[in-house]
Amino acid sequence: MPNINLKIIIAEPSAIIRGGLELQLKRMVGFRCQIVEVSGFDSLPESLRINRPDVLIVNPDMIGGVALATLKEESGSHSMKCIALVYSLFEHVRMRAYDEQINIYDSVDEIRHKLERLNTEELVRTEEAEEQQMLSTREKEIVVCVVKGMTNREIAESLFLSTHTVITHRRNIARKLQIHSASGLTIYAIVNKLVELSDIKVEKDG
Amino acid sequence: MYKKGNYRETDKMSDLICENYPMLLVMSRFGIALGFGEKSIGEVCRQNNVDSCTFLNVVNFLSDDHSTTIPKVSTCLSLESLITYLHNSHDYFLKFRLPHIRAKLLEAISNSTDDVTFVIRRFFDEYAEEVNKHMLYEEKTVFPYVRSLLSGEKNKKYNISIFMKRHDQIELKITELKNILIKYYPGATNNMLNSVLFDIFSTEEDLASHNRIEDSLFIPAILELEKTLS
Image (tube, rainbow over all chains, first blue to last red; front, side):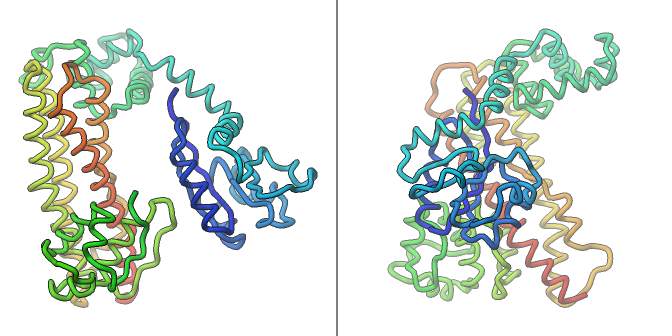
C-alpha cells in the first residue's frame, strides 16, 4: 500500500507531549506526515492559514470555547479533519464536534487505525491509483516516441491522436512512473526493453 | 537521532560534530579543519577567522527540524561569511561530490549491457550539467550582486526577487535517478550500487538543505540589506 501524505498541525501547549506525538507520527508506517507544531492559541489561526493542513490535532483546552467551524473557516479548508488530543475525560457534548479523539495513552497502532479511518477516501484513491501504475499499451507507445526525441505534434501525427491527448498521456505517464524527464524515461524504456539503444542514437545523429 | 538545534558558542565543537555528523560538511565548508581538540565552537571559529554567529546560524538552522517555522534573520549574520560557505558548498558538489558519484556509479553498473550504461551515464551527465548551471548562476550573478550591495552600491537592474523566482529545487532530478535505479535497475544484487545509492540519498538531503539555507537564511538576509539601502 502506498504512503498517505498528511500535513498535520499539532496544537498543544506541552512541548513534551507535542514532541512525543510528532515522533510517533513520523515513525508511523503507511503515512508520510509533515508536521507543524503550534504551542499557543494565538499563533494557531495564522498557522492554519499558512499551512492549510489536512488534519488538526488539538488539545480542546487550548482552544477553549472557540468553535471548530471557525477554525476550519480560518484554514480555508472545510475538509480539514479535527482530532481532539485528550489527557482526561471531557464532556461528551464538547467532543461531538471533533472527527476523532486521540488519548495520550493510545498505542501507536490505535493512533494509526484512527488516522486510517479518517482518511479512508484518500486510501481508496491511492489504491485505485496503484492499480493503474502499469502503463497501458498506448502509453508505452508514447514513451517510445518521447524517448526517440519526437515532439508532441510528431507523436500525435504518427499515432493519429490530437496533441491534447498526447499531452494528457504524457502527464499520466509522469504521474504513474514518477519520472518527469525525457532522459529518465529513456532509462525506463531501455531497461524495460521498449526500445533499443540504436533507435535513440539514430534519432540523435539524424 | 540527531540532537535538535540551539548550539551555543560555549558548546564543544567535537560534541556538535559527533552528535550531528552532517555538520562535518558545514564545518569544512566554513574552512575549519579537524583536530580542534577540546575547544569550544566559539574558540575554534575565532582561530579560523570564521564568523561564529553565521556558523551557529547555519548549524542551528540545519539541525533543527524541517517542519518548524522559518527563523528570523539574525542581526549578527555576516553575508560575506555566508557567501564563502555557499561558494565552498558549490565547489564541493561540482568538483568533488558529483564526479565522485559518477565514477562510482559507472563502476557499479559496469556489468550491465552497453545500452543501460549509456542511458544512465547520459542521465547523470545531464543532471550534473543542470546543477552546474544552477550554481554558476549564483556564482556569476547573485554573489557579485550581494558583494556590491555590501559595499554600499545600489543596482537598478537586479534585485534578489529575480533570483527568488528562478531558484528551483536541484535535488528533484537526482531523486528521480534514485527512484529509477531502485525500481527498475536490472541485474544482480550489487554492493557497489548500494553504496552509490547511499551516496545519492545523502547527496539528495545535502542538496535540499543547501537550497533551504539559500531560501531561508541567505535570501531573507539580502532582502533586509536591500531595504536598508533603498
